[in-house]
Image 1 (cartoon, rainbow, N blue to C red):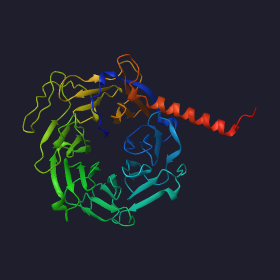
Image 2 (image 1 turned 120 degrees about the horizontal axis):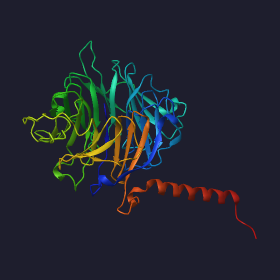
Image 3 (image 1 turned 90 degrees about the horizontal axis):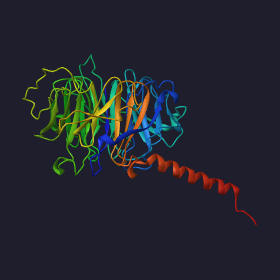
Image 4 (image 1 turned 180 degrees about the horizontal axis):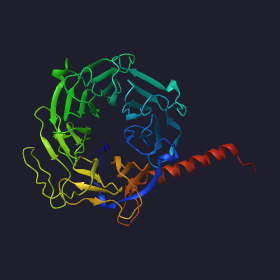
Length: 419
């Protein structure tokens, strides 16, 4: 179901009521195969340029867009590398031009793309292939923050009953560095490296377990730091980035979240003896939230009318959820205040179908969402006067820079004006 990419780091929590739809674009117009959006990946904010957005759809192609304008980047349609549908993509935190992809079913390799090369026709010179010797069908992948270690989670091998976590040294792509095979009993849904600790890994599986590993340990048993049991299949997981104003400093480097197939959500410390911070078995009911702090507490499910149909993913420090209705309506649910969702831009024509993914950018207080209707929408925070805040004008600033650049180019072609 829904997946999410979360960025945090702003100093002030955004005012969700002031988020307005400022831009939208159809991915199908860029590529007919991109009929709807499955997943988004955005370049890390610490790298330049930071405007690329990678869009996954039910195909073997990746569409690259400018995050601010939602327009395709010339020559940036990555295809012909995988033989089946791409199921996960991640930008490198070490080099802005690297994008990692993995595909499902018969595709037993990871591809590391070099975006500095024109990949419009899937040029093989731009690809480094990381092969799995055992023929694992990959379901998720990531690259460490130092760019040296790659990891993939595999689908369950019905013959051996293994759900393997496979590792590669990026310097030796032809064969894996090693694997873990005992921690999960069903297909891997997510593998995610910590954003700043290069040898800390979070994994989540359809078996309902999320695990935290210290990869400096000598074996899998010693590497396992923490296990969270969601009680049902997990389909999304990631680390929550540190935010000193919104999250206690001692938790900043160890907090992670999971999303379950039953529209549940949990926020926890992925450390030894770590605490469960928030646990939501299912979406709250209109008659009263079923949010509780302890897994032993039973939630009252006497009212069946939920505040929303599904969870898209967490925002900021994990205490707000982007939720949606199958009509395309989106809202932000506060898990601290336990109130009804704040619905975004009532009356705005945004999505018309289930929203599958989102990306929040705390630097610009902007949100990008992708849906099964093939639409991407950009939502930005507005000031009290109705205009965009200064930090929320990247598209305007980008357009201004482009105009200035073109004027300089015209002057250079014309040369000096003689009297």
